[in-house]
Image (cartoon, rainbow, N blue to C red; front, side, top):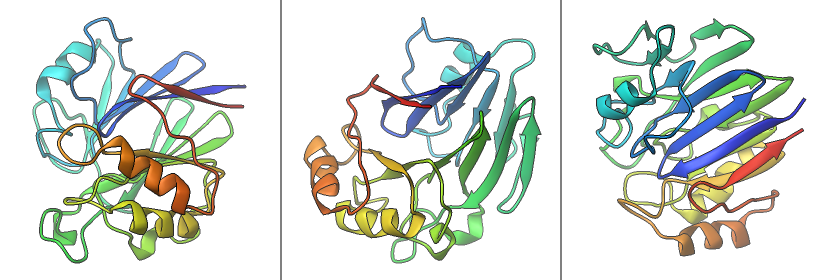
Length: 206
């Protein structure tokens, strides 16, 4: 069974496995994008929680999970929670800054480990390198590298070693902060396998 992971740009990701379509932090999505069965939001900053994009992607039975209540949210979840939707299991992982004030730990904002098709995919959310990453042992990790609000390339490379992913894809660059050079610097610094994608690019897990 293959799983397609598409980086939409910034922190947005789409995951397709069998007939299930899952989005994490969709923002500036194309009007032709496939409808979502599941939408996961990491926190309520405008570039991660976009009511306009959610409205574009939703259909009648779409589930929207987030760490905060909102009109679009069907499931409010907290760090440590688990949500099972169809054949997808979602574990809520803390995401926060250690030395910056943009994403306080007290807010309870999230990253996610998505388990589907026999694979584990980690989207770190907006975060620094934190102890909760250690030993997640996932097949694929998507981690921010743009700096300012999140890890920079150097800290992201250290985090990738903590996570022990089969493959890591850098995200959270090329829009508000960060550039492709940050992703390439991350790839050069990282001891784990890395795949740098262009927006709209995909990676197949099989």
